[in-house]
Length: 99
Image (tube, rainbow, N blue to C red; front, side):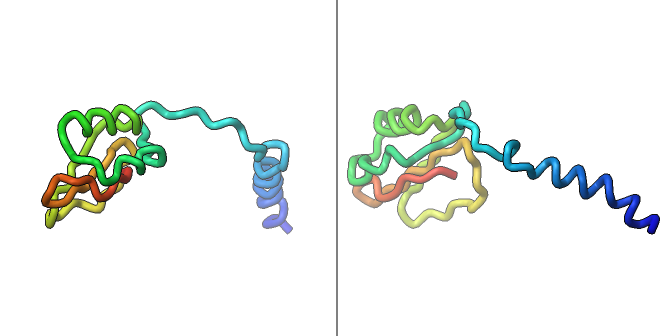
C-alpha cells in the first residue's frame, strides 16, 4: 500500500506533463548556426570554389563549412552547425549535407 502512495504523485506528475494541451506544436523558430541543406541541392553539379563555399555556407545558416575532397576519409561525428560539401576530381559538387 505504501508503494502505491509513493508512486501516486509521480504518476500524476507524468500524466500532467503529457496532457494534450501541453503537447500542442508551437511554431519553430530558426536557430542561429543550425545547418539546413534542403534548399541547397540545386547547387549539386556546380563547381566547388571559395566563392561557392561562401555562398553555400551563408544560405545554409551553418557556422562552419567542411569540404569533402574525393577519396578522403571524414569523421562521422554529427555537428548541427556544420555544412559538408563533397566534390569530385573535377571540383564538381557531388553532395551537400549537414553534419
